[in-house]
Image (cartoon, rainbow, N blue to C red; front, side, top):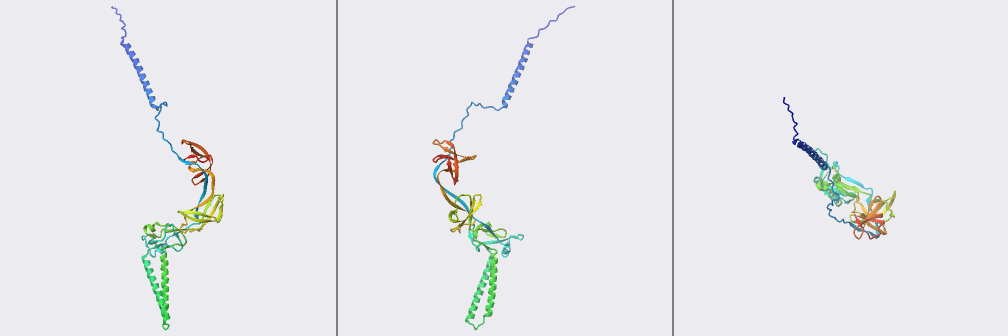
Length: 370
């Protein structure tokens, strides 16, 4: 029996190499994964700017300020009161359908409004009118023709009556009594008819019932040349002729004082006729015009000027130069180099566009105006 011993075959070298390569591959894979994770984390956040990097500066622009000079001296003290006429009443003038139906034509069969053409508009807004003044005259040819014919008839009868009376005086032997009586009756009838026709025509002509100022004219009168029975055509505002204003000013008003008031660059004189205490330091003043105000509309306001004792030796500046915050007042004083310095001031009265300064400025300074 042949003994055969089997020799152990040594492991080839390539198995060692393969093991090393496997470990190397795993290491590289881990490194790649780690790198990818780092890249992902850095990409999710916002990139921070380096605070040490100096950015490019914007171009410097010089800021300019409006300037005003602080003044010192006497300052005029004038108050202006706005006068208006008291107890204003506005009356509307329009045409009644009853009067218009005698001459006018309807807009359409199913509508109740009448339309009449305009012959003439005698007034305009702002005009002063008296009671009895014609405002608008209707254009009614048929009515005008009838009226003219009736006026001629009345004139003819009047002349005929005068002629008969003259004949009776010249020749007493003739009896004209019957003709005179008959003519008198005809003339009376003609005059009655004429009066009725004139009154009837008045119904479609607007006549002012009282003194006042025209404050409104319907656009149809001027733009389209007709009026209707739907809308008011003219409005007239009337008042008592006295003007009033309320004031809390401490000026020593006295009855009998005369002041100047202006409107539309015209000046009028007004006398103070009554002072009424309204309480809480307020007074109601009543004025009566003592100059011709016929060209002044009743509804128009006037500026009445009251000259008070002027402010003596005060510091004042444009009111726009003062900034007020939380009960405190400031101005920005400009030095010789153009720099501004905030300075607190104490303010007094405001007169028109000027602010009286009680302390903080002495006069002569230059301040910034916003």
